[in-house]
Image 1 (cartoon, rainbow, N blue to C red):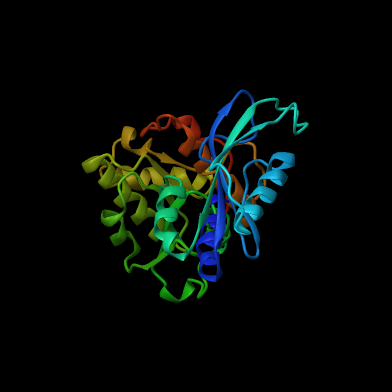
Image 2 (image 1 turned 90 degrees about the vertical axis):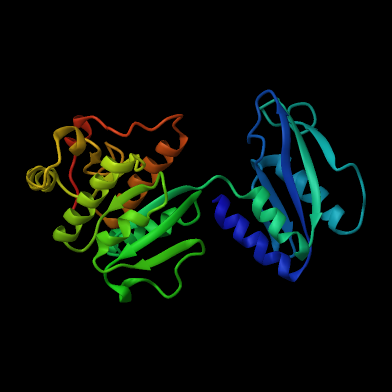
Length: 288
């Protein structure tokens, strides 16, 4: 929820100062990593540095700073002896009172690196997936050939793009985009996948191409893509069905959570292979 917390902080600064609390450094076992943050705004805290007594005391300290009391910018918190948290490590917290003029600097400093994601399709699963992905560290481009299907209140940070034909948007995708294909039409899905494979052939910069659907759908697509001149090793760049294996259910919300978890796993990996094994195309099925 880092992105959602950041948006709340930046909006809150328009109504008054906030005290930003950042994990400066750590020793031993601690609840959050260096760089984690929270802020105490006029309407309450946003974000988290791990909860528990540490966060309780940090909020109290932040409120003292907002009341005009001074003190060292960085404070040491021993979790075990003084706070009674079983982690037992030590956390150094930096306290910074910020105002409206600090919005740009905070947005740059606190925003996590965002993985670019291109979502083709604004159907039921697409809408559910956007709701799950929007608060997470992804830069989301949402693309559909139907201009009227996007919500008027799309989440902050989601770029809605009308493209007709929809596959015409593929050449302009951000480099290293994780592509998710789930349009309302199998014909559109096929064209998008073909355009992604062509770009991957030419540039090699789409590390993940995910297609929603069943094994039967992928078998049909494989034959049609082969007829368009794509080799078996190129077809192996496609992951279908998408989502983590073992998560059952075809409801849009279930698929959305499964796909979001898969993207988070890809983001956390040290390296993402551009050629997933054929075994990933054999497990499970989805609507479409």
